[in-house]
Every structure is written in C-alpha cells, then in structure tokens.
Image 1 (tube, helix red, strand yellow):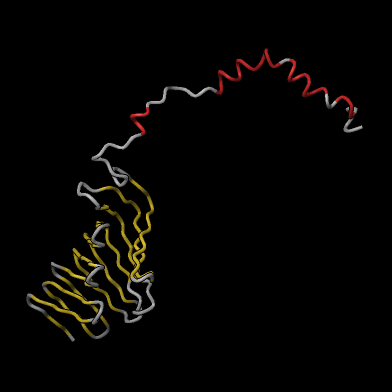
Image 2 (cartoon, helix red, strand yellow; image 1 turned 120 degrees about the vertical axis):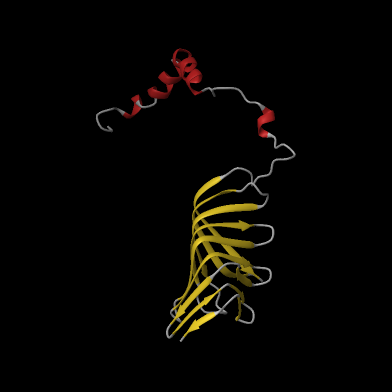
Length: 191
C-alpha cells in the first residue's frame, strides 16, 4: 500500500482522465489558445530600420579592446539611441582603464555619447579624471577619447591638481602612446 491507496488503483487515474477528456479538453484548449493574430509584416525589418534603433537600457557596460586585449570598461546607469546613426547616448558614466600596460585611470561624468563605428567616446557635464596611484585629478566640462588614435582631448578649460602642483589651461590634448600632454590658451601652473 502507498499512503492508503492500493497500487492497482493508481492506473485508474490516467484511464479516468482519458475517458473524460471530451468534457474538459475544449475549455482547456480555448484557455491555452494564443490571443490576437499574427501579422508577418510586423516581424520584417524595413530597409531603413536597423537593430540599433530605438532602445533604452539601464546599467550598461561597454568594453573597448585593442589587439584582443581589454583596455577600457565603460559603465553607464542609462543608455539610449541617439538621433545620429551608430551613436549611443549615456547618462551617469564611469570609465576605467583596465589594461595592464599603463597605470589605472578612472573617469566620471554625468553625460556622454559613444560612436560605435569610430570608437569615439565623448563625456560631458562635470568630467572628473583621476589617477589613483599618483593622486592626480583632472576636471573639465568636456572630454573626448579617440580610441583609434589613442588620444584624450578636452576642447574647453581644464584644471589639474596633483601633489605640489595645480594647473589651469584653456584646453588639453593627451597622447596615450607617448603619455605626453599638450596644453594651450593661457596655461597657469602653481607649484
């Protein structure tokens, strides 16, 4: 005996379900039937549509690689399509240099955009760049990073603070290959 039911009676359950199926099958089938119709035209992409069109995502991560090595990790609280093709708009952005060839760099900004086809990142609105190992901070309102040329460019005013030094300049160009800075427009340095 299995829990008070004789074993020979267990085979009756499938037999009863099969015998009574004409009574319960139509309402169950009607309940499980798909609602609405299928329009094959809605499933086809138009010629002017692309898979990148019209999306909004929360907590997005973009990894930039060079020669198979991960170099940058770009995180955003929100990302959505731009009005321009191949461009993603970003909000609350943090970018980190994660490559092993150079010292770590962290970048924060409130807004940004990333061009997928040209690998061009633009950060705006309270941009802050920190080099934690050297205790350096760079502040700017706009910062652009061209991954193909490995250049960081700020077209507006920049302010750099490091131990024992403060620098105020009109704009800045930084080459990641040579690690060289180019400042213009009234550079002011306080040592």
